[in-house]
Image 1 (cartoon, rainbow, N blue to C red):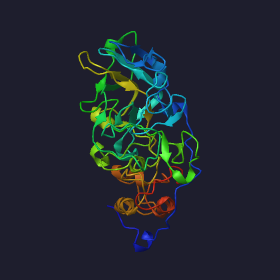
Image 2 (image 1 turned 45 degrees about the vertical axis):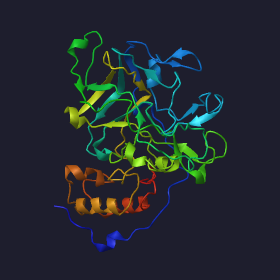
Image 3 (image 1 turned 180 degrees about the vertical axis):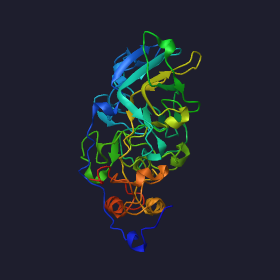
Image 4 (image 1 turned 120 degrees about the vertical axis):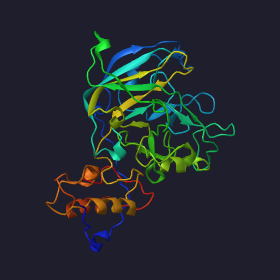
Length: 360
């Protein structure tokens, strides 16, 4: 049974996000090995370099932060932040899977079905899906406050995602692949955001242009309550602000395939699909980032306080219920005033992105 911490616990000190935030990349946060790549049918060509998207090493490491101009609306030599309306699109950023092909990647550690993972999301696949602005308008790397999303149309090319604990390429028939049922797939909503919308801390030169700050945090799942329709009528700035520090991507829950962990992921494209999925990265979700955003809406506000209050046990009264493990912020086996002190330190109010480093 949960127990309230009392009225005094609701006194909050509102803080702002940290302008010094920076994601510290660890290669193990992402897939580290290409086990097998079968291109399958034809794949797209980088129209600038005239080279095909068939370099599987492009799927390792973090998702793309900045890309280049497209030589149509933006000069090719101009760096451009990856945005929900302007995705990574170069052959050195992505690998494509032709019809009948597949890509198998491996992590150097088990990716765990951790009950502390935000909203139950255990891993994230990044592609180059993007939401069209509508009206025939192309992104010109200008003011995101002046560009309005007019349609819920998302350009995506779903790939079938399967995971396995063990895989021997010499005996592939023995692999127990667990496949996520459609409509779950790779290269789908949410589009990647390469940099935080942070005009207060954004340099004026490209790719920042006065609006884009530090790289996003690719281990934070995108808010599952949002859909493409959530952004119709919103500006690109408002779109990006809803990400907070999150980089987007498509999230997957291992509960859906009844696995406690996996090391291998396969993304396949059936013959006759009419699509060529592009893969940028696969990330292992960090259960501690951002620590106190219990409802996954990128802020810490009264809704998160309500979740915390329902989970509170008091000191030495743990362990918390499985659905409350994420509220044990100091991981000492209970949910008490020590955890509330961390929540208070991270509190910013509605629509103020929670700093992933606020727990420290």
